[in-house]
Image (cartoon, rainbow, N blue to C red; front, side):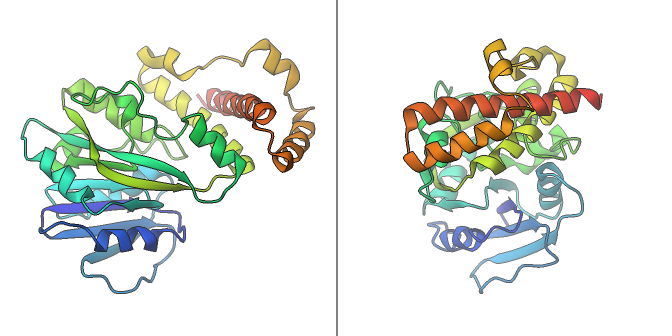
Length: 293
């Protein structure tokens, strides 16, 4: 067994579409797929490769991915998002770079497509807020590009790092925090734009606001563990203008305003408002996290 694919899922319907894309891989070696989810079990049609399903015992993607690696048999671990579609050479391109023993891991490429047609998903894609590769050093990938939607590591490197930190038990930053520790340990991760996957995004504004609260909580955990990075996570109140405009008394008003603007599809007015609201909820998460310290 050379490759173990680890997928953490919340039970999204798209996962079988990902498995279909893995069936079509141009890859001669054996591989296994380990899915860690919240259900007791998930039923899939028969595939030519081995699929192992594990029930998630702890909350958070960090614990789920750690459990997947713990139950893996491969020399290399490939983490994929459950709503990704892998291009046929994705496995081969990861392993092509990992032939170089100086390379500890490989970041693949993710192309984002709007699968819902919703304007909020357009906002995320057009503002490059999902898996941005701008400014990346392809020869030595920095921690802030450590996207577990499409990234591979040598298993021994993952184990040497201690794996994902399970203190991150809500959404956000468990992946970047592992990347930061790998950077500090001197492990080199390269970016291979030919290891391609398509991310079929379907995001709703209200649920994403809840995600931003969790992200703010996780930012506090990250900053506590690595104080030298505190400035990177904006652990400070929003701008005065935003605090005056958006507060607990005006939230409902702005939600109604956004709903009307979404019907009109006025991006010029809507996108700045999305941004302000998301900043507001991120700060709510930060405040919540700081209270728990």
